[in-house]
Length: 370
Image (cartoon, rainbow, N blue to C red; front, side):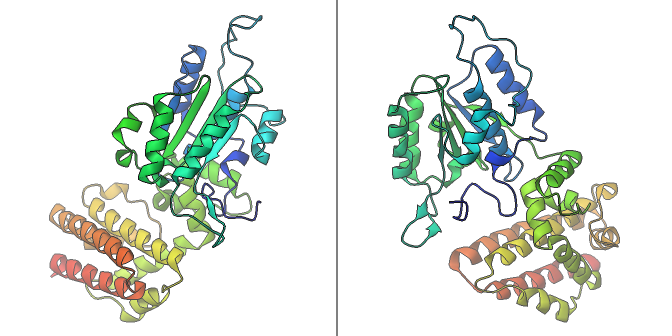
Protein backbone atom coordinates (compact mmCIF):
# COMPACT_ATOMS: atom_id res chain seq x y z
CA UNK A 1 0.00 0.00 0.00
CA UNK A 2 2.91 2.36 0.68
CA UNK A 3 3.80 2.24 -3.03
CA UNK A 4 0.40 3.57 -4.09
CA UNK A 5 0.03 7.33 -4.69
CA UNK A 6 -1.38 9.23 -1.73
CA UNK A 7 -3.16 12.55 -2.21
CA UNK A 8 -2.26 13.73 1.30
CA UNK A 9 1.49 13.13 1.02
CA UNK A 10 4.00 15.65 -0.32
CA UNK A 11 6.53 13.94 -2.54
CA UNK A 12 9.90 13.50 -0.84
CA UNK A 13 8.60 14.07 2.69
CA UNK A 14 7.37 11.59 5.31
CA UNK A 15 3.59 11.23 5.51
CA UNK A 16 2.06 13.54 8.15
CA UNK A 17 0.99 10.49 10.17
CA UNK A 18 4.67 9.52 10.47
CA UNK A 19 5.85 12.96 11.61
CA UNK A 20 6.25 12.79 15.35
CA UNK A 21 7.61 16.29 15.91
CA UNK A 22 5.71 19.45 14.98
CA UNK A 23 7.59 22.70 14.35
CA UNK A 24 5.93 26.08 14.78
CA UNK A 25 2.15 26.60 15.08
CA UNK A 26 2.29 27.51 18.76
CA UNK A 27 -0.87 29.65 18.57
CA UNK A 28 -3.21 26.97 17.12
CA UNK A 29 -1.74 24.39 19.48
CA UNK A 30 -2.49 26.69 22.41
CA UNK A 31 -6.09 27.12 21.22
CA UNK A 32 -6.62 23.37 21.08
CA UNK A 33 -5.05 22.83 24.50
CA UNK A 34 -7.23 25.56 25.98
CA UNK A 35 -10.32 23.84 24.60
CA UNK A 36 -9.18 20.44 25.89
CA UNK A 37 -8.40 21.74 29.37
CA UNK A 38 -11.72 23.58 29.48
CA UNK A 39 -13.59 20.46 28.29
CA UNK A 40 -14.85 22.48 25.31
CA UNK A 41 -13.49 20.53 22.36
CA UNK A 42 -15.47 21.67 19.31
CA UNK A 43 -16.86 18.99 17.02
CA UNK A 44 -15.24 20.54 13.91
CA UNK A 45 -11.98 22.44 13.42
CA UNK A 46 -10.83 24.04 10.17
CA UNK A 47 -7.04 24.25 9.84
CA UNK A 48 -6.22 27.07 7.42
CA UNK A 49 -3.02 28.36 5.86
CA UNK A 50 -0.71 27.94 2.85
CA UNK A 51 0.06 24.48 1.52
CA UNK A 52 3.00 22.60 2.99
CA UNK A 53 3.38 24.48 6.28
CA UNK A 54 2.36 21.53 8.49
CA UNK A 55 -1.44 21.76 8.81
CA UNK A 56 -1.93 18.04 8.23
CA UNK A 57 0.90 17.27 10.67
CA UNK A 58 -0.92 19.39 13.26
CA UNK A 59 -4.17 17.55 12.49
CA UNK A 60 -2.50 14.19 13.19
CA UNK A 61 -1.00 15.58 16.41
CA UNK A 62 -4.47 16.59 17.56
CA UNK A 63 -5.95 13.25 16.48
CA UNK A 64 -3.23 11.24 18.26
CA UNK A 65 -3.71 13.19 21.47
CA UNK A 66 -7.51 12.96 21.50
CA UNK A 67 -7.44 9.21 20.80
CA UNK A 68 -4.70 8.54 23.35
CA UNK A 69 -6.37 10.53 26.13
CA UNK A 70 -7.91 8.78 29.06
CA UNK A 71 -11.74 8.51 28.89
CA UNK A 72 -13.48 11.91 29.23
CA UNK A 73 -14.46 13.29 32.62
CA UNK A 74 -17.24 11.44 34.30
CA UNK A 75 -15.13 8.36 34.85
CA UNK A 76 -14.36 7.03 38.33
CA UNK A 77 -11.13 9.03 38.37
CA UNK A 78 -12.84 12.43 38.10
CA UNK A 79 -11.60 15.44 36.14
CA UNK A 80 -8.54 14.71 33.98
CA UNK A 81 -5.33 16.58 34.85
CA UNK A 82 -4.32 19.78 33.08
CA UNK A 83 -2.36 19.09 29.89
CA UNK A 84 0.38 21.35 28.54
CA UNK A 85 1.31 19.57 25.31
CA UNK A 86 -0.29 17.64 22.47
CA UNK A 87 2.71 15.30 22.30
CA UNK A 88 2.08 11.58 22.69
CA UNK A 89 4.90 9.13 23.51
CA UNK A 90 6.20 7.59 20.25
CA UNK A 91 5.78 4.09 21.65
CA UNK A 92 2.08 4.60 22.43
CA UNK A 93 -0.16 2.03 20.73
CA UNK A 94 -2.31 4.78 19.15
CA UNK A 95 0.79 6.24 17.46
CA UNK A 96 1.69 2.86 16.00
CA UNK A 97 -1.83 2.16 14.76
CA UNK A 98 -2.22 5.56 13.13
CA UNK A 99 1.12 5.17 11.38
CA UNK A 100 0.02 1.75 10.12
CA UNK A 101 -3.41 3.05 9.06
CA UNK A 102 -5.17 0.62 11.40
CA UNK A 103 -6.51 2.92 14.13
CA UNK A 104 -10.27 2.16 14.41
CA UNK A 105 -10.98 5.57 15.93
CA UNK A 106 -9.57 7.52 12.96
CA UNK A 107 -10.99 7.97 9.46
CA UNK A 108 -9.04 9.92 6.83
CA UNK A 109 -10.81 11.36 3.78
CA UNK A 110 -8.66 12.21 0.76
CA UNK A 111 -8.79 11.93 -3.01
CA UNK A 112 -9.26 8.21 -3.70
CA UNK A 113 -7.42 6.03 -6.15
CA UNK A 114 -9.13 5.34 -9.47
CA UNK A 115 -8.89 1.56 -9.77
CA UNK A 116 -9.29 1.72 -13.56
CA UNK A 117 -6.39 4.08 -14.20
CA UNK A 118 -4.26 3.46 -11.12
CA UNK A 119 -4.08 7.25 -10.63
CA UNK A 120 -5.61 9.52 -8.03
CA UNK A 121 -9.01 11.00 -8.79
CA UNK A 122 -9.05 14.76 -9.22
CA UNK A 123 -11.64 15.29 -6.45
CA UNK A 124 -12.94 13.81 -3.24
CA UNK A 125 -16.23 12.25 -4.32
CA UNK A 126 -19.52 12.01 -2.52
CA UNK A 127 -19.05 8.25 -2.22
CA UNK A 128 -15.86 8.86 -0.25
CA UNK A 129 -17.70 11.13 2.20
CA UNK A 130 -20.52 8.61 2.55
CA UNK A 131 -17.98 6.16 3.98
CA UNK A 132 -18.35 8.20 7.19
CA UNK A 133 -21.77 6.57 7.74
CA UNK A 134 -20.10 3.20 8.12
CA UNK A 135 -17.31 4.65 10.25
CA UNK A 136 -19.72 6.28 12.69
CA UNK A 137 -21.97 3.21 12.81
CA UNK A 138 -19.17 1.05 14.23
CA UNK A 139 -18.84 0.69 17.98
CA UNK A 140 -16.36 3.19 19.35
CA UNK A 141 -13.36 1.64 21.04
CA UNK A 142 -10.62 3.14 23.19
CA UNK A 143 -11.84 6.29 24.93
CA UNK A 144 -14.96 6.51 22.77
CA UNK A 145 -13.78 9.31 20.51
CA UNK A 146 -13.90 9.11 16.74
CA UNK A 147 -11.74 11.47 14.72
CA UNK A 148 -12.07 12.39 11.04
CA UNK A 149 -9.26 14.12 9.11
CA UNK A 150 -10.13 15.61 5.71
CA UNK A 151 -6.98 16.41 3.74
CA UNK A 152 -7.92 18.53 2.08
CA UNK A 153 -11.47 19.82 1.94
CA UNK A 154 -10.51 21.98 -1.08
CA UNK A 155 -10.53 18.77 -3.16
CA UNK A 156 -14.23 18.05 -2.52
CA UNK A 157 -16.70 18.45 -5.34
CA UNK A 158 -20.08 20.09 -4.67
CA UNK A 159 -21.89 16.86 -3.83
CA UNK A 160 -19.16 15.75 -1.44
CA UNK A 161 -19.18 19.14 0.31
CA UNK A 162 -22.95 18.96 0.78
CA UNK A 163 -22.66 15.44 2.19
CA UNK A 164 -20.02 16.64 4.65
CA UNK A 165 -22.26 19.55 5.62
CA UNK A 166 -24.95 17.10 6.73
CA UNK A 167 -22.43 15.45 9.06
CA UNK A 168 -21.43 18.84 10.49
CA UNK A 169 -25.07 19.78 11.06
CA UNK A 170 -25.72 16.65 13.14
CA UNK A 171 -22.32 15.47 14.40
CA UNK A 172 -22.24 12.10 16.18
CA UNK A 173 -21.43 12.10 19.87
CA UNK A 174 -17.71 12.28 20.71
CA UNK A 175 -16.83 12.87 17.05
CA UNK A 176 -14.21 15.49 16.08
CA UNK A 177 -13.64 16.52 12.46
CA UNK A 178 -10.35 18.15 11.45
CA UNK A 179 -10.68 19.85 8.06
CA UNK A 180 -7.48 20.93 6.31
CA UNK A 181 -7.80 23.74 3.76
CA UNK A 182 -5.33 25.84 1.76
CA UNK A 183 -8.06 28.18 0.44
CA UNK A 184 -10.71 28.74 3.13
CA UNK A 185 -12.41 31.51 1.15
CA UNK A 186 -13.55 28.90 -1.39
CA UNK A 187 -15.20 26.67 1.21
CA UNK A 188 -18.98 26.80 1.55
CA UNK A 189 -19.93 29.48 4.13
CA UNK A 190 -22.32 26.98 5.70
CA UNK A 191 -19.37 24.63 6.33
CA UNK A 192 -17.10 27.40 7.63
CA UNK A 193 -19.77 28.62 10.03
CA UNK A 194 -19.97 25.20 11.69
CA UNK A 195 -16.22 24.96 12.31
CA UNK A 196 -13.85 26.60 14.71
CA UNK A 197 -10.99 28.05 12.69
CA UNK A 198 -7.36 27.31 13.50
CA UNK A 199 -5.26 29.76 11.45
CA UNK A 200 -1.79 28.32 10.75
CA UNK A 201 0.94 30.75 9.75
CA UNK A 202 3.95 30.03 7.51
CA UNK A 203 6.94 28.72 9.43
CA UNK A 204 9.60 31.12 10.67
CA UNK A 205 13.05 30.77 9.04
CA UNK A 206 14.28 28.88 12.11
CA UNK A 207 11.31 26.49 12.22
CA UNK A 208 11.49 26.02 8.45
CA UNK A 209 15.12 24.93 8.65
CA UNK A 210 14.49 22.64 11.64
CA UNK A 211 11.47 21.03 9.97
CA UNK A 212 13.42 20.57 6.73
CA UNK A 213 16.39 18.97 8.48
CA UNK A 214 14.09 16.64 10.44
CA UNK A 215 12.22 15.56 7.29
CA UNK A 216 15.25 15.35 4.98
CA UNK A 217 18.26 14.61 7.20
CA UNK A 218 20.40 13.60 4.20
CA UNK A 219 19.93 16.91 2.37
CA UNK A 220 21.72 20.17 3.15
CA UNK A 221 19.49 23.17 3.82
CA UNK A 222 20.20 25.92 1.27
CA UNK A 223 19.64 29.38 2.88
CA UNK A 224 18.00 30.46 -0.38
CA UNK A 225 15.05 28.27 0.55
CA UNK A 226 14.06 30.78 3.24
CA UNK A 227 13.05 33.29 0.57
CA UNK A 228 11.74 30.87 -2.04
CA UNK A 229 9.75 28.49 0.18
CA UNK A 230 7.88 31.30 2.00
CA UNK A 231 7.55 29.32 5.22
CA UNK A 232 6.43 26.06 3.58
CA UNK A 233 8.54 23.01 4.37
CA UNK A 234 6.73 21.17 1.58
CA UNK A 235 7.80 23.84 -0.90
CA UNK A 236 11.34 23.82 0.51
CA UNK A 237 11.57 20.04 0.08
CA UNK A 238 10.29 20.16 -3.49
CA UNK A 239 12.74 22.92 -4.43
CA UNK A 240 15.62 21.06 -2.81
CA UNK A 241 14.82 17.72 -4.44
CA UNK A 242 14.35 19.26 -7.91
CA UNK A 243 17.21 21.80 -7.88
CA UNK A 244 14.75 24.68 -7.65
CA UNK A 245 17.27 27.08 -6.14
CA UNK A 246 19.54 26.43 -9.12
CA UNK A 247 16.66 27.13 -11.52
CA UNK A 248 15.88 30.38 -9.71
CA UNK A 249 19.53 31.34 -10.03
CA UNK A 250 19.25 30.75 -13.79
CA UNK A 251 16.25 33.10 -13.91
CA UNK A 252 18.20 35.81 -12.07
CA UNK A 253 21.19 35.31 -14.34
CA UNK A 254 18.94 35.55 -17.39
CA UNK A 255 17.57 38.88 -16.18
CA UNK A 256 20.97 40.53 -15.65
CA UNK A 257 20.98 41.79 -19.24
CA UNK A 258 17.46 43.26 -19.21
CA UNK A 259 15.92 45.16 -20.91
CA UNK A 260 17.16 42.57 -23.42
CA UNK A 261 17.17 38.87 -22.58
CA UNK A 262 20.00 36.61 -23.55
CA UNK A 263 17.93 34.65 -26.11
CA UNK A 264 20.02 31.52 -25.69
CA UNK A 265 19.32 31.42 -21.94
CA UNK A 266 15.61 32.17 -22.43
CA UNK A 267 15.30 29.38 -25.01
CA UNK A 268 17.13 26.98 -22.70
CA UNK A 269 14.65 27.75 -19.91
CA UNK A 270 11.66 27.39 -22.24
CA UNK A 271 12.93 24.13 -23.72
CA UNK A 272 13.31 22.61 -20.25
CA UNK A 273 9.53 22.23 -20.11
CA UNK A 274 7.09 20.56 -22.43
CA UNK A 275 4.15 18.22 -22.44
CA UNK A 276 4.69 15.57 -19.83
CA UNK A 277 6.86 17.81 -17.63
CA UNK A 278 4.06 19.43 -15.65
CA UNK A 279 6.04 19.46 -12.40
CA UNK A 280 8.94 21.37 -13.95
CA UNK A 281 6.55 23.72 -15.75
CA UNK A 282 4.70 24.53 -12.51
CA UNK A 283 7.99 25.11 -10.73
CA UNK A 284 9.26 27.58 -13.35
CA UNK A 285 5.95 29.47 -13.30
CA UNK A 286 6.14 29.66 -9.52
CA UNK A 287 9.77 30.82 -9.53
CA UNK A 288 9.07 33.47 -12.18
CA UNK A 289 6.16 34.68 -10.05
CA UNK A 290 8.40 34.86 -6.96
CA UNK A 291 11.12 36.74 -8.88
CA UNK A 292 8.67 39.37 -10.17
CA UNK A 293 7.08 39.70 -6.72
CA UNK A 294 10.52 40.33 -5.24
CA UNK A 295 11.13 42.91 -7.95
CA UNK A 296 7.91 44.69 -7.06
CA UNK A 297 8.82 44.80 -3.35
CA UNK A 298 12.47 45.84 -3.51
CA UNK A 299 11.79 49.55 -4.15
CA UNK A 300 9.59 49.67 -1.05
CA UNK A 301 11.92 47.63 1.16
CA UNK A 302 15.40 47.50 -0.39
CA UNK A 303 17.04 46.19 2.77
CA UNK A 304 14.55 43.34 3.00
CA UNK A 305 15.67 41.69 -0.23
CA UNK A 306 17.36 38.52 0.96
CA UNK A 307 19.64 37.26 -1.79
CA UNK A 308 18.85 33.80 -3.13
CA UNK A 309 21.42 33.95 -5.94
CA UNK A 310 24.71 35.82 -6.06
CA UNK A 311 24.26 39.42 -7.22
CA UNK A 312 20.45 39.14 -7.10
CA UNK A 313 19.94 42.27 -5.03
CA UNK A 314 21.89 44.35 -7.56
CA UNK A 315 19.65 43.01 -10.36
CA UNK A 316 16.48 43.73 -8.38
CA UNK A 317 17.47 47.30 -7.50
CA UNK A 318 18.49 48.11 -11.09
CA UNK A 319 15.21 46.81 -12.53
CA UNK A 320 13.03 48.41 -9.86
CA UNK A 321 14.57 51.76 -8.83
CA UNK A 322 11.40 53.48 -7.54
CA UNK A 323 7.76 53.00 -6.56
CA UNK A 324 6.50 53.72 -10.08
CA UNK A 325 8.57 50.77 -11.30
CA UNK A 326 7.21 48.74 -8.40
CA UNK A 327 3.65 49.33 -9.62
CA UNK A 328 4.58 48.30 -13.15
CA UNK A 329 6.11 45.04 -11.91
CA UNK A 330 3.07 44.36 -9.71
CA UNK A 331 0.79 44.82 -12.74
CA UNK A 332 3.04 42.52 -14.78
CA UNK A 333 2.95 39.86 -12.08
CA UNK A 334 -0.86 39.90 -12.02
CA UNK A 335 -1.08 39.75 -15.82
CA UNK A 336 1.38 36.86 -16.12
CA UNK A 337 -0.32 34.91 -13.32
CA UNK A 338 -3.65 35.19 -15.14
CA UNK A 339 -2.00 34.22 -18.44
CA UNK A 340 -0.41 31.14 -16.83
CA UNK A 341 -3.78 29.97 -15.46
CA UNK A 342 -5.41 30.41 -18.86
CA UNK A 343 -2.60 28.49 -20.54
CA UNK A 344 -2.94 25.54 -18.17
CA UNK A 345 -6.72 25.51 -18.50
CA UNK A 346 -6.48 25.51 -22.30
CA UNK A 347 -3.62 22.97 -22.24
CA UNK A 348 -1.44 25.18 -24.44
CA UNK A 349 2.23 24.55 -25.18
CA UNK A 350 4.28 25.26 -22.00
CA UNK A 351 7.45 26.28 -23.89
CA UNK A 352 5.55 28.91 -25.85
CA UNK A 353 4.12 30.34 -22.64
CA UNK A 354 7.60 30.69 -21.09
CA UNK A 355 8.84 32.53 -24.21
CA UNK A 356 5.76 34.76 -24.18
CA UNK A 357 6.28 35.58 -20.51
CA UNK A 358 9.90 36.44 -21.21
CA UNK A 359 8.86 38.93 -23.88
CA UNK A 360 6.36 40.53 -21.48
CA UNK A 361 9.08 40.87 -18.82
CA UNK A 362 11.35 42.50 -21.44
CA UNK A 363 8.60 44.95 -22.29
CA UNK A 364 8.17 46.04 -18.65
CA UNK A 365 11.92 46.35 -18.14
CA UNK A 366 12.17 48.54 -21.27
CA UNK A 367 9.52 50.93 -19.96
CA UNK A 368 11.39 51.31 -16.68
CA UNK A 369 14.98 51.54 -17.95
CA UNK A 370 14.64 53.57 -21.14
